[in-house]
Structures are given as structure tokens and as C-alpha cells.
Amino acid sequence: MIHTRDDGSSVLNGFEYYHYLPSMGAAVLFIVLFGLVTSLHLFLMIRSRTWFMIPFVIGGIFETIGYIGRAISASQSPGPYTLGPYIIQNILALVSPALFAASIYMELGRIVLMIHGDKALFLRRTWLTKIFVSGDIFSFLMQGAGGGLMGTGDITSIDMGQKLVVGGLFVQVVFFGLFVIAAALFHARMRKMPTKRSEELPWWRRHMMSLYVVSMLIFGRSIVRVVEYLQGFNGYVRRLGREERIANYGASYIMGHEAFIYVFDAMLMFIAVSVMAYFHPGDVAKEVRAAKVGRSENESHDKEATSMNPIGA
Image (cartoon, rainbow, N blue to C red; front, side, top):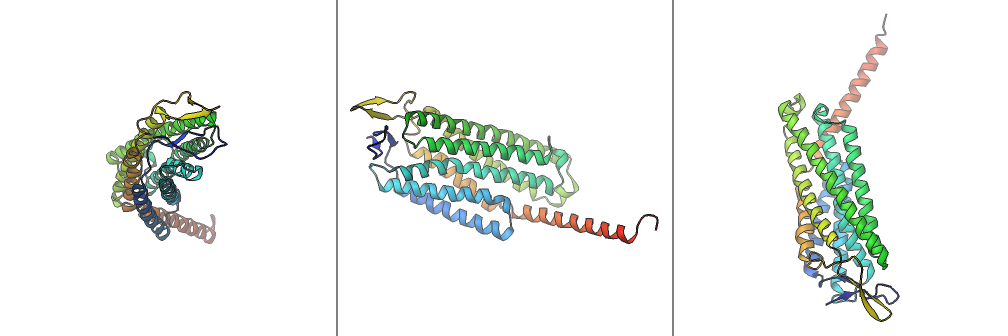
């Protein structure tokens, strides 16, 4: 069955929004799951003042709203479907892992700072965070723009949108791969040559493990989404009373089965968000703040001592 949009003015009247009947039960389940775990993240972030987790919380909100959009579409089954909910569920669920990634990148930089591990990095800590977050922003913008173009109702825009989404996912995969390599090298060097601070705070290792787990979950999800968009659409466009197959869009097995969205996207991202809630980096943020306060107090004390005992006095 072809489940189409209801837009007689669109050149893509007849184009399939969904290649299946969206499940209301699955959508509601993940609205509840993401809503609960995101609320927990918001509470933990505010309580511990872990402000670098703001992108992570926004990503959780995006996931929740995205599945609300999917639930709205499910309420319209078997169609015709409206454009708004389709765009909401398509874009927000697509870009939210990029927001999760931004917080993960920033957490690694703070772990390095906390245990005085700069020498174990293959590049400067400040550059590490800037490079990975910049790549993540680029990926986010590409996927967001691509997702938006795919809902415009124009064949050329849909084709361009698909390419942008694939490109953004590839950027995400590449940067995640490099991030995992960078984190693993840092971890290995710290095990060989631990700093005094790393031995005083042995719990930093569990945060590294949580970063690996979450990174691999997002990495796996992104690979599946790349394959999904490379397979393309199985859509039709009606022109002058006849149906024509959209050029360059082949049959997509993944897009034709909703289970892939829930097993390889929703479930993986829920596990990732849950892992970060269990191993919340609030203690990392606390140690970094304490170190900054300590340095400020020492600098203030040194200045005061210098002013009381000038050279030559």
C-alpha cells in the first residue's frame, strides 16, 4: 500500500511518506522512555551544574518530540499524512545524536583536564574539543538541512536532501571513529604513565568506558542510517495524470520496515542516554570547578604575598 501526503498542489502528490503503517504503540513507548530519561538528565545537570551536558539534554528533548511527531502520523494511519509531523519525526530523530556527541566530546576534554593528562594526548586538549565539536556542528547542520529539504515536495530538493543527510552521517561516522581512536590512545598512555591525579581519582576510568559505550552505540546507529539513505526511496510522482518513478531512488529495504527505526535508532539511542544518566559526569564537572577555584585562590594568594613582600624590600 502507498501511504501518501494530502497535498493536491504538490508536485509530489502521491509520494510515500511512510512505506508502512506507523506504530502508535512503539511511538508512545519511546515518547515515555525518552521523556523520563531526559527529565532525569535535566535534573542531574542542574543539580551538579554540568553545563556541558546541555546539548545532550536538548538531544533527548529532540528525541521525545520526534516520536511525538511519529505518534501524530500514526494517528493518521493509513493516511493521508500531513507534512508537519513527518518533518518533525524525520529531522529531530535524525539530528539528536549529533547533540549527544557534542557533550561526549566536551566530557573527554574535561576528563583530561581533571587528571592532568594533557601530555597523553596526541594534540592539545583545547584543539581536541574544538576540532570534534566543529565537526559535530557541521554534521548537525548537514543532516538538519537535508532533512528539511526532503519535506519540501520538490524532486530536486528531495534528491539534494538525501545527499546532504548521507554526507552529514558520513561526517559523523568519521569524526566518531577519530574520537574513539583519540580517546583509546589517551587511555592507553595514561595506563602506562599515570599521573598523580589519575591515581587519586581512579573513577575517571568508568567515565571513559561510558564514553566508549555511548560512542559505539551512536556509531552503529549512524552506520545503519547511512545504509538506509544510500538505499534511497521507493517513491512515485504523479504528473499529468500518470505515475513516474522518481529518478535515482531505488527500493529501500530499511525504509520499508519500521522495525529498523526502533531497533537500530530509537533503542540504541535510549540505551546511550541511559548509560550517560547512570554514569553521569557530574563528578567530573565538580572536580574541574574545584581545580579552577584552587588555582584562582593560589593566584590570589601569590599576588597578595608579592604585594606585601616586594622585591628588594
